[in-house]
Length: 248
Ligand code: NAD
Picture (tube, helix red, strand yellow):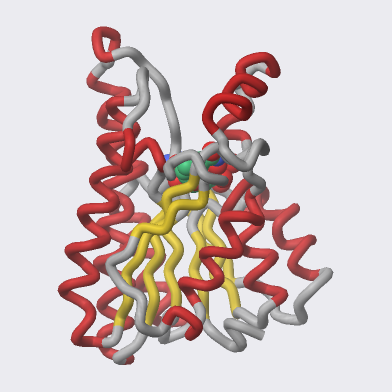
């Protein structure tokens, strides 16, 4: 069991990569703190966890755009659980728009959800982890943050920002034995990408993905597990691509 008894907090755990991570971490012995906007949206994740683990997850609910609710959730975690071993900053949104059509509300929404919330989660988690002198923070960036993509300047900026924040936090927190890494998924089959039509999906696979398949949430979750576990005890400040060879 790779994360036996570790307290693991996953944001955006209702579906997609967050849900897959929750199930895989539960299988490996983690005690989970699961986040979603509403408890109800975690029903499916919790049912899947119950099939593989005896531990009931601790649930926190808030919109990651709301600073006060986010802060209150950490106060609750400190009071009720008192420690945190792993934070996975997974919640995120993708909205596409060519540069000429970008609007202020869209920029604010994407930046608050994908970047600002990551900074605040790291801040509150690191306070707990520094005291414990151990911890692992993993931020879910994107291949679009490392390489860009037409129609995605805002999303790319938010995910590139996550990488800068990851590397800076890694430098700050290394003396406290707190590791900070990021993953940069390529094209993963989740609700975030389900607006792509079948024809364009086939083209993406054929032209861009060397392994000739779309990634599954579990492909990403397994790398998150590695970065959370002691197998990666000397790895910090890294960005690991999980993209089937989109960038090689
Ligand atoms: P998804 O849409 O299935 O999951 C996103 C999760 O974030 C959901 O649980 C959603 O409810 C939550 N979320 C979004 N905004 C929120 C808010 N304001 N408050 C609270 N929760 C919020 O998509 P996914 O693909 O599983 O995405 C997970 C992460 O992976 C995201 O950060 C995304 O940017 C990143 N990513 C995905 C891909 C891909 O191809 N799917 C590629 C690269 C990076």
